[in-house]
Length: 235
Image (cartoon, rainbow, N blue to C red; front, side):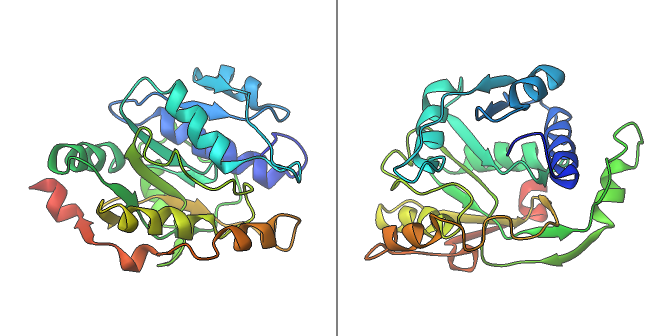
């Protein structure tokens, strides 16, 4: 999303990216997109920026292109795709380490932790994580706004339009077709999705995404093969 126009969207994106930079150990962070303000945000937070994202015949940004560019740009064998309206806290990196050490190959998923956040998070406060979690009002058990996977795993993704929905059903169904465990990390990772309206509902590309799912097995977070909790990670 561009860093212009809707002020709430801009606030959510800054909250999300800032939270990622505070993870310990700090991961390599790459922002994708050529929209206005993305390069400036990458410079502000000291993260990498990849502007070259492909579009499909509708002119919509391509999810497949983002995943393929991430495969090329990442310095590590394991990649986390995260929407830029999702705040991460300090349970993320320990869970990633646990998964990588325990499973030779996997794809993760998790339902959304929706929170009503309307203003910039005060990251200078020692209690900022608690203040974010205190605003969670609902947990969903269907779509997933992030995933962790091995580089190259999603190279055969259909050419979905970004932000038009339905593509995450394919992302969670695909591991089952190739015998790779789908791991639900909702009980271990508090990934907080900042509440907003349906920005793209009914927009061009939605039905195209649905059509790309025809004949392809879909799955949701409740269909995971393995469920990981904070207790598992602490062990």
